[in-house]
Image 1 (spheres, rainbow, N blue to C red):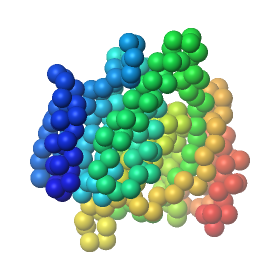
Image 2: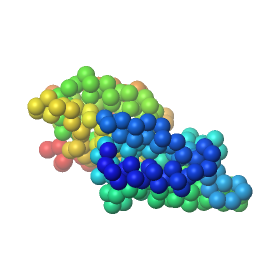
Image 3: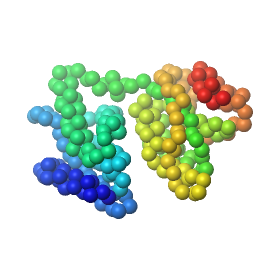
Image 4: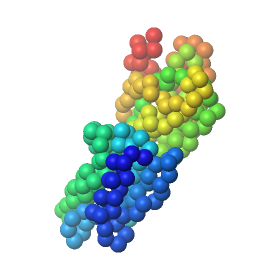
Length: 258
């Protein structure tokens, strides 16, 4: 771990010094630091939120992973706040950023509290967020059992359905809540999912999102579970999209594939 990370944790323990506000969960040379900060929005009816930051050994060169939980917010709202924090972290300069992220979270809590007080449930629309479809292009899959196992597990955790189409191009079709689709993509970019040509674990840095759009209505949604399917020709690939009633998306990505 960098000296800056240790200094930041020390400062945070001083700032969040009330009983139960700060906890160093884990410290290891291999996995880095995990800290938990329990905070609330300002005011008498501030929302209680728990943040867990996982600082990798390379932090702050790379942003922290973050989890959000709360007894006052729904699971969907926690997912939404987590994504906002991850996006915020990705946009900051690579320097200690935990305190900035906590302050940003507290601002979000104030906004949520105001929404509750006024009786306007702004985030309710987000909870009813339309289903989303995305088509991803992968660069390679060498360690197929490991890689596919991760994709299946993530799809279950994020309540996504999908197809992994293996052929000349490696494509993933995903359907589910938009923020969960984006979380799936984030994991692909940041986790070591495969091995490189020398056999070393590597990330899917060349994954690209070919297209994303609102899903068909639930009655038209043909995706069930996460299914792996091989194809050997363009007509077979086209048929796979047609079976899912996604021919329009296929026609839009076809120029990229050819």
